[in-house]
Image 1 (cartoon, rainbow, N blue to C red):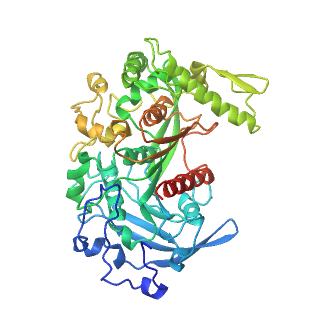
Image 2: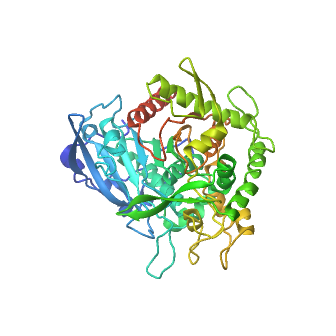
Image 3: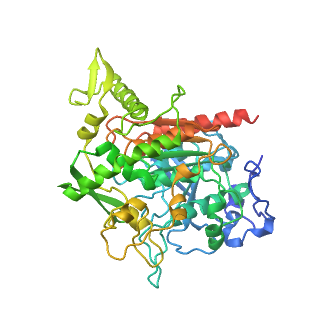
Length: 510
């Protein structure tokens, strides 16, 4: 066995002689001598606390290791910490859901929303829906759980410098993964089976974490933090409503919503470390409509340059009017979504963008679909010409709060003394830039709600297509009907998928 079975008493007083070694991750993990892990980053020195919770009429026992600082040189200890939770049964050589102490995958959820700072998540009831959160469900199904906090765009240090601008959040998550890999021998679970999970900006970071595993682009940032010298490649990705591909998201949004000028804009702020969203109604100005008309045709060039194909091998493209096989591809996704809802008894009589005959969804009008769900963001949706968006705030630097990140918005800028971030900083925040057959996670599960209008359906669809067009990747992409911008709404299905890919991998490696 990879981990030695220790008595409960001995586990609670783990000795200094048990120095962890680095797991072998496709020969990409760097070799480490046992004495290279600083004592304060050595998991074997930690003492866990026995806890329990009730779920589905059962008592789930687990051991909690909280507030673990995962880098040697933290910038902000309030956020660069990780909580690790392990099913108690593994300390007694038990099997849970076909997993044991050596084979249990590590569920790695982040709580990032709006690219704001996020603390490590805990085992607790979800305050929004009063349901068990994903960490609780994961533990009940035999997964080890490791949730890392990450810096965000609004953080400042004691001198007033910003310390959470891009790419801080993804660097922090990578550093946390390296902690898990470096301490693999000292922990229950398999650090070669890390499955990330996130929603919205957290979903984008989850996908980016998967796609960019071991990329040298982040090495200098990781070294500065004193991240452990281990792999940051993960096994699988779960991404709900990913707000990603930001440098192309404005074009995609206007391609979908051009001509829809009434909006319900969402105002985002932090409330007790949770993102609070409020709707503000309005109508686009003449200037915003003109910008929309300029952005829409640019999207076709981007799509056509990707040279992506559907599962039939058909090239997906758009013409100068924004029509073509890529648009048809999205319509097929919506047909599948609506048919699933119809088969489940959902009343679709008010969905005027659908055509239904004999209980079959036979067609979708994508333009009518966009009008039906409605616009949520004014033009440009992400790189605001007045530097007012959360994404402008994300791409600031230590001394500048907000910056442009596209040439289009910089050209049409209306803010005084505006600057533009470097292309490299933008690159490091986009999973599309790192998808490769030779690197990154193997498995991806991506969900974008049919009623989600925070970003265009085109954005997650393109990410899924690029992954599907890449050798060695498996992709489960769906557009759940009626779902808005949210996540963790299908945890039973999520963990069934996570178990399936983990078991399949184990069998393939025999």
